[in-house]
Amino acid sequence: MQRRLGVGLALLLILGGLMLWRWSQQPPAPSPEPSNSGLTMTAYARDVQLMATDEQGREAWRVSAPAARYFQASDLWQLDSPTWLIQTEQGTPWYGRADQARSWDNEQQARLTGNVRLHQRHPEGDTVMTTDWIDMQLPQRYAETTAAVSLDSPSYRINALGARAWLAEERIELTDNARGRYEASN
Image (cartoon, rainbow, N blue to C red; front, top):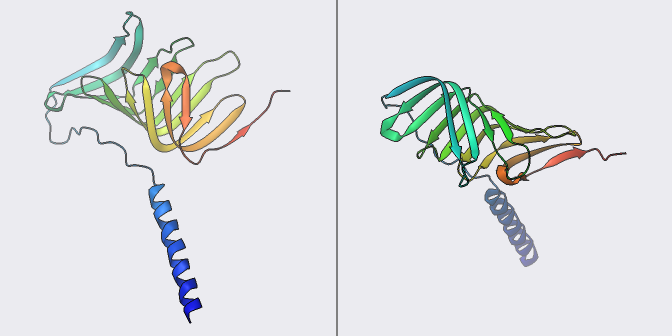
């Protein structure tokens, strides 16, 4: 009887540990973004282009959109079909597009949503990252998502859950459940 009770208790402890481990592996919820619901639009613009420079006065990033709305009460820009360029420290720039973008905190932060695509051109072929949404810290040229991500180049394709990208440094980290295919050169 004691042996059965011990085995049962051990199984309960293992099951509890597995449940706790699985719960701790869940990706964090996306960080909140300002909402424009209930706010009054204070400006509307067409053919918008925003640009920022780095400490040396060189272009750091640029974003263009056919239409944008500004909500002054929450310092929120909402951009339709944005395209952007983000400079790197040494290599070619990153280009991107999305269905929508929101920018707040004096254009320091942005969330890109819907068919988000970042790509960088290389002589041997483009590197392309796609996802449903991504948060960006614009001055740092840093991007992060917990959504599903695909990273493609001529020699590999990797799918993962989440990514962190230091675009100026040309460094991408896939954060969870990365699976891929790599084709070695002949």
